Image 1 (cartoon, helix red, strand yellow):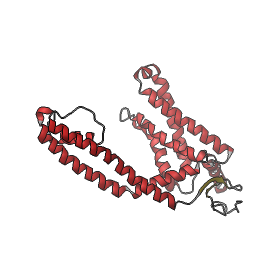
Image 2 (cartoon, one colour):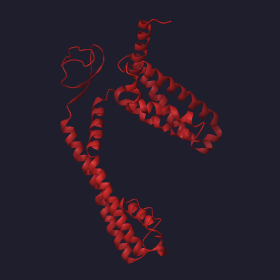
Image 3 (spheres, one colour):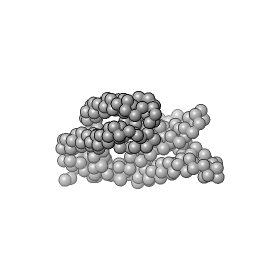
Length: 276
């Protein structure tokens, strides 16, 4: 039976390899992981091509199982190598890592769910840390914060658009009627939403002059609707960015931990005095 000290040392070594982006072993692990993620995504996409799947089905299936097993082992090692497993398990990356391993297992019970393995693409977000692009991480945080701060405004706006769609869709139903393709109010509301968003599938089109005038009015409104949520998020993003401290992409020369704030005087991990 291993002593607690040896077990702790063993966990620390695994942690250094998996999470240590500054160590040679950690960098090699991250690079291999990135290529494995990309390879698995390509395999899943190619498998959806029937001609290729008929020819290379066994190869695709074996490749998926190998990648899935490797990701499962990695997920378990990530859990046992951290001091607070629960924090990792319920973190964003922890949930993404779990979702990347489940589809192949679930495919035994639900057909074609292995295609959900494309969720592994989210794991590529780790490239920001691997390549030390801390500034981009800060920018992504600003965007997330802006979306969060503007969610109530966007919800009210979308709710208002839904009400407008119900009203205008009903009016169009009364103008055109079933004889012109508008067979029900829900179908007319669907047409209104498609028109407002400037998608325009063309499966239903107004035939009367009055209906075409209303459709023109809705299309013009649609251009303005697209700009509103963009403006809301942009304003929040600008305000959020002004409150964000300056970031850096340097590392502590003593322990190798990322130095996030440019005005930091001491390392947040080991307390080492930083050189400006």
